[in-house]
Image: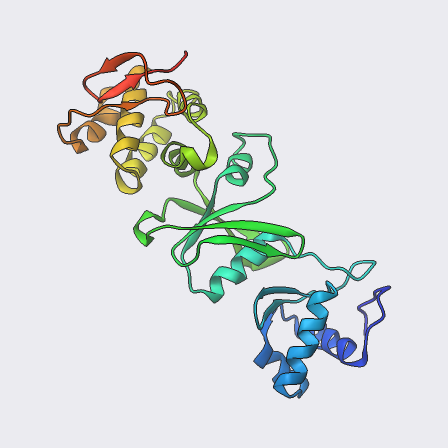
Length: 271
């Protein structure tokens, strides 16, 4: 066996890790492991629970585990968070995409390294711990998922990092501002790209498809304010029904300022 660790392994643990290395298995459940090692269900369950507590494997849910191809010095293994997200949501048969601070960093909008990735999906809501790392899962309707790019993980080309496109995550920053604290910052991200007609078209199309009335108002108002050609945002204007209610451009600031009658926006930005 080539797996080495300063942690002392039991006979069953050594046998299990040898099987993992020989087969290249990355994720498996209690039944699959018990069958491969010819263990009774109670034996495999006890073995996996013990190895999880020792940090040798990582539990995705009860009975389902991520498995190391080799153990680091000290014996405690930490898989990449992308690997954990992929197999956790694959098990749930979920559609999903990453958004929020980790996506802002990925697309170069922020230098802040996110401690907790945020993942939109259509099956599960809550915070989950995978080893030392945690992920926030936000359940959204399936029709709100889309506008993504996928990248192979270098460690396993069959596993993808599924990320909102640049336009999609900026849309999320406007739509889900209360979660991410991204207004009026998102407006600056859009203004910096006002000359990029491809980006503006994608942003408008995604807002029409995945946004809501408030998002369409805010984005349309902003595009008009920063001088984008009307033909690029006219569809947002046409999507809106007549209304007598007004929303603030910046929901985090006092609702004081000029009222824009075309978009029903209170222009309460400081700049």
